[in-house]
Image 1: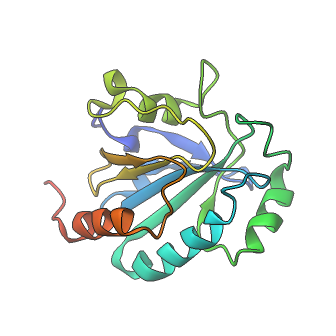
Image 2 (image 1 turned 180 degrees about the vertical axis):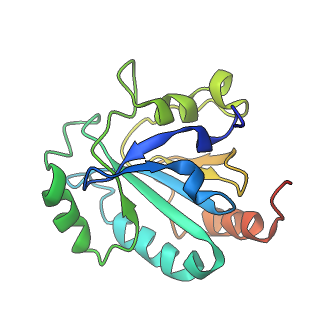
Amino acid sequence: MDKDSIYQFTVEKLNGEQVSLASYSNKVILIVNIASQCGFTPQLQELTDLKKEFGDKDLEILAFPSNDFGGQEPLEGDAIATFCSNYGSNITIFEKARVRGQYAIPLYKFLADKNENGRINSKPRWNFHKYLIDRNGHLADFFYPFTKPTSAKIRKRIQRLLTAEPEK
């Protein structure tokens, strides 16, 4: 398995199911840490809209609820799923996780550190920090929380990755 790829990680869905990120191979992925009580929470609707726009073209959006920033995710388990459903959410919600610091889950340690991912240093600074993954599972870009998911910048970058052929 490629050590510079997210496919080496297994993460847990809200229902407790373990999911290998290798199951998303050949897809473009946007990974986002979310929180229900954040000023950026309306971005959940934009993430849903982005998935509607590009989902049939192999875009996946993976959301990781986190309470790391300002205690803005007090919800747990099913309450998180219910909250996200208020946005008509069609994105995949994973178990609440730590996304920064020494207790961050391995996926987020990998995403945040160039020594791990081979490409970019970008630790989440707040909720709704976004990581864009190419069809080979490699970190392609990141976007700060204030960059809206439906911004031209993100949409163009996704479109470019969707039209690129995966490496063999």
